[in-house]
Image 1: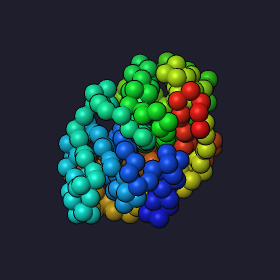
Image 2 (image 1 turned 90 degrees about the horizontal axis):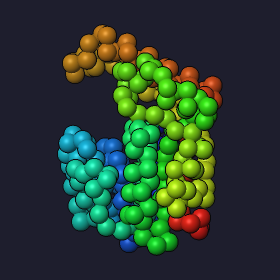
Image 3 (image 1 turned 180 degrees about the vertical axis):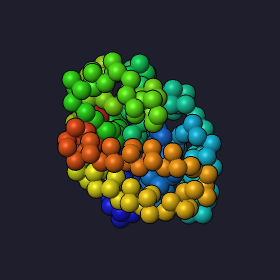
Length: 238
């Protein structure tokens, strides 16, 4: 699983043409793995998050890897980003932003992109009619897991990007891989119930989280959901 996830990160960095000297902005730090792999390529990375836990762990991982000269981990809202970058990557942020803020998100991407730069997004997607229906409903996921979020369609991404003068120049789906990832996550989670309990998560939470992982796996296996690597460039230029 770890090898596969590294290949996924590397593919996204390849899509954004990240290499020695690249000025890279990452919107959504996660736990710092992408920033570390970009720094190992020789990129200069600014990665932003709203989570103090993510910031602190990412900073400690960056320091342990000896990349403090190449990686800056900042507590920052994406709307407050300053500067220009040769490449921008963002992994599964658009789903959490909420449709109301998609224009601000794409405006930020466009404003922060240096001339000739590349933006590589990883996004979970669903069919456009399903997205429209979901936006008008209050689902179990929106209540308990991702309040305020919305999974976009490919059409919505293209439309919002074009409004900001950004155009989709590559679009690759690999939803069947995410189904397998979710299966492995679920098996690891249910195989460590004692450890999870020690961390303070009760039986109700554990049942809910197992359902979430299984529910999501079913979505990807059935094709109801997909996950895609999408390349955006200014004005449609490659």
